[in-house]
Image 1 (cartoon, helix red, strand yellow):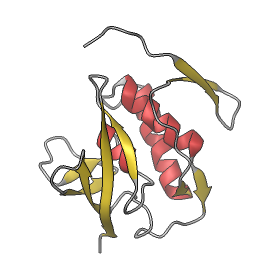
Image 2 (spheres, helix red, strand yellow):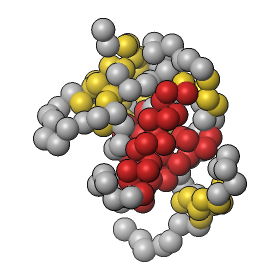
Image 3 (cartoon, one colour):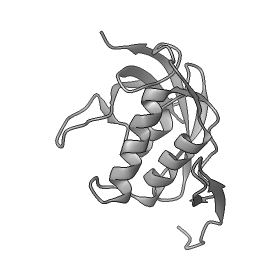
Length: 154
């Protein structure tokens, strides 16, 4: 593993604040609902204030989702991954896995739950079935994340 520093990109949010993001964090231009957008902002505030364990990568992913998303009044849960979606995905063409994406994961919650405030969860938000995206790893490597299918919970 190298100690090469990644260049930073600058983005400006809707309030005129400048944000510096690692250049490797992929852009996001998908559509999310206003409710999801507000939830992501809440997650980001909790990461930035230390109320939630976080890493610079998770914070950067959340910022990219918030500042790049097209915010719609509503998005059908079966069209895009949202909190409450049951999503099946694969990483680097490996076996299909699935889990429930949740905004409020409790500590110690076991398998089958994907917190939105994780790298995997933050990457999944807004993706659609059949879509692929880079999944950044904390060690600087990148895998390919593919959403196989999704459904809303009852």
